[in-house]
Length: 549
Image (cartoon, rainbow, N blue to C red; front, side):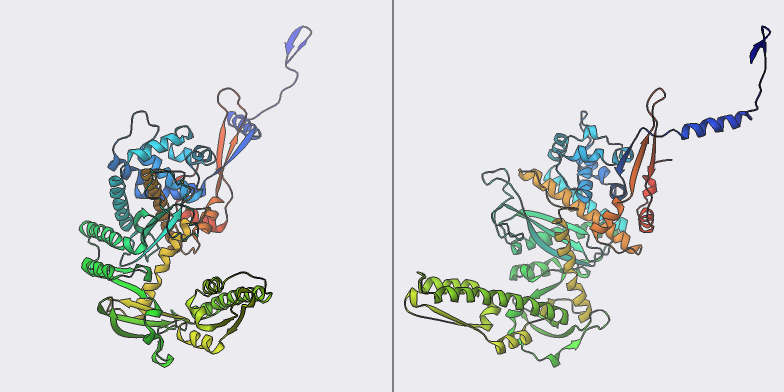
């Protein structure tokens, strides 16, 4: 429009289209606006773990046992303990650092738990709110839910124990569970917390846990573990009609052997598979190779065995001697290293004595040699002679008896002796059952992995909080192994760490656009995924927790 001769007049006209065309044009223009900033949040691993926890109803179960939350609490006790377990699975850290980590994840969106209520003191309040008796009740009910929900096979269970080093001050008297003892992490200078687990052969999922002072030998805790297992099994049988006690087989290593423990197992009505140190059965080790027969060439390549009966801890039992070529080769290589190291130390000692300047007495030199040759296998193959009557005259000669070394290899290497009361099982079934012991050992290795599903860091220094921390760590291990089992059943074979690494690659991106009045607009989307990540998305139903686009 313009004025022509003082009057308004249309001088140009252009057709813009229908109202719908104009609306589409405006929307396209809005989309063309670039975001002012973006945020990248962890999603896949957090959502997958949360999904398993939600499927088991962990929060609801804990809150039912503990009771309603305090009016001033930002979240329930169940929420805090569940989040602690989630963090243990994907990114173990202290409660003080939890809120900052939570802000880097998309968890607040789908859990409806904001970082503002995750102060470390609120976690401590939640830990103080649950009693040790309630923890035991929660653990038992959770184990039953796992068996029912995931249809776990509990006919074969492996039992093992370990300990974890802590950094609790020596003068701290508020944590009697942390004691100095035989440290399996070789940290004898630190106070230890012992932990026993009973795990399923089906997926290595822990069903029973028992924390105990670190100065107590494993063998003394065996009866307590069996009692807990028997009580849990009785509750399961009442609830869902589980296998009878006689149909449950407990597998354990020679470290749990004692007359009392074998008697306790029999009194509990449980079947068992254990082992005996080969050195306790020289007559079995001396049997010729021709007595052994191949067990199952398809399942156990080269493994041979012979079975007999003998008195073990006061009762005649079924005993099986096995020989594994793989174990034989590994022991041969390991012993060669041990022997070379010992010969090297003795040679160094011999050279020092040959200089004639040492002041060591004969008793001291003999004690040093005994320390170097403490291994009984070394004593069989190493010969030494110490001559001279004064320190300056002492001379040491060392030789390796190759014939004794060959005899040792034939007699011992590659051999294991198993003991069981499973009279109806074949040798192959007994061997397979005993090898499930590795599931329990793997669980402990997993708890000592500093990156995922880790017992450390443990920033607690009271008995009660240490027990609650142990509960959350065992719950984290249960969730991780259930996830690995689900992935394996779907055809995806991966370790816990690899599985979590792949899930962590599924991230959430938040695009934040400039404000045109009011709050800035945000658009959420998941990052591009690989084929294996797509499969994991399907396995763990991650679309349920994904942002709506």
